[in-house]
Every structure is written in structure tokens, then in C-alpha cells.
Length: 104
Image (cartoon, rainbow, N blue to C red; front, side, top):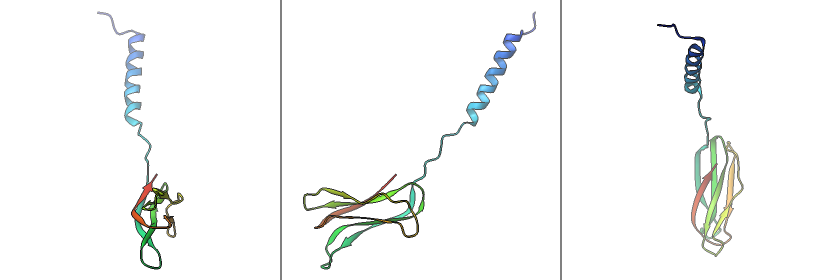
């Protein structure tokens, strides 16, 4: 029987290398803000009029979202990067029936 030729050795080497490379490839990490909270903003009478959001850690961005009762629907605060004094405010101007925070 004949010994394996050059072509067979090359094919074996390419297959072995390709298998090694595919094992070493990792997907990139995707980090979001952490340590987040959202509370209602209130007027002088104590009525909920918007949302105040903050995130102190992590990466990415966040913003406050206020769900309004005055026909405006949903109002969004500006996107902010997390940090010690980082906050985003979304005010309805009348009455807020819901609040949330968006992360990206």
C-alpha cells in the first residue's frame, strides 16, 4: 500500500488548523448600564408628572421614559452614559401614569 501523498497531508493540516481556529473565536461582549433606578417626578401638589432615571455603573446608555395621561403618550428623556451623577428626566407636563427606563 502506498503512503499518503502530499495532498492528503495538506488537507489534514488545513482541517486541523481550521478546527483549532474555530474553537478560539469568541463573540464580542455587549454591556448595558447597571445599578439603575427610576422614580416619579412630582409637582408641588405631589402628583406624578414624569420620570427620573439614574444608572451608576456599567456601559452603554440609558434614558427615562414617562407614560403620560394628557394625550402626549410617551415622553423620552435624553440618552445618558452611566456614572455617579448621571440622570435622565422625562416630564409629561401634566400627569404620568407610568414610568420606565430604557437601556442600550
